[in-house]
Image 1: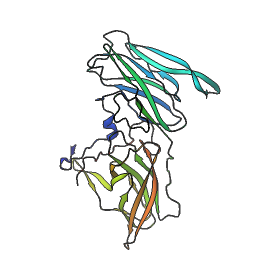
Image 2: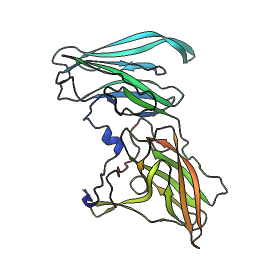
Image 3: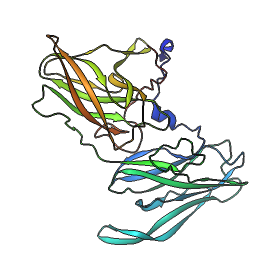
Length: 330
């Protein structure tokens, strides 16, 4: 497949690209999951300590993460630390007052140590709390010479920009109804199943997706949001073996027909973001229409922010591929 180089469009998911193995710190493979769900935490280690091989990984279990159980790793020994909980919880009708607070993998031999030039993963699973919010996993990486203590957490928010040794962030998100209706039944234009993709640190663009149904033939002629410097309706399609993407001056909405804006097709592109888009929050968006008679109207909606489409399986990976238009030129 060829990518249209003239527009310098990067045909790669921004979130997926951020999860590639070239890390400067230890991160989670899946960086978002629904509140109350069972979560598999995969810690990705892409380097050692200034050239020295990694001999141990210790993960501090954050408050609210219940029943942590590590996955064994060939050539490494496992140990866990139990402590009294400040806030006990109930599991299968029984109160749990003591739980795993630390998990450590230690290389059983020098040959088993993770070399600086290699990449590997360390895994554990447990149950997430019922409330949404950021959850930070602090990780101590011990090497043959020296160590890296990934334990820094921002004073507020979730941006790790400027932190030298950030902890691994998991965004615990609220559940979004499968067919969330954002407009009243009497509205001439109905919007449902809408969402905005959450961003990662440093990302300046994102996509918004939704289903739009108009009672009468009309046209979507504009989009705006206070969180974006530029918001446009875009089209992405294949022309032979070339992937082409472009901004549209409008999108026809036939009477009574649902038009879906989704990754890989029509979608709303939000660029020059003024703030991070955090999973679990909402983004105000204004949709502008013009009917067959030229009469203009607008519709204000609040779109939920998530790493997944409504109803998609959670776990942090994008449900669909989205373009990073940070380098998009028109």
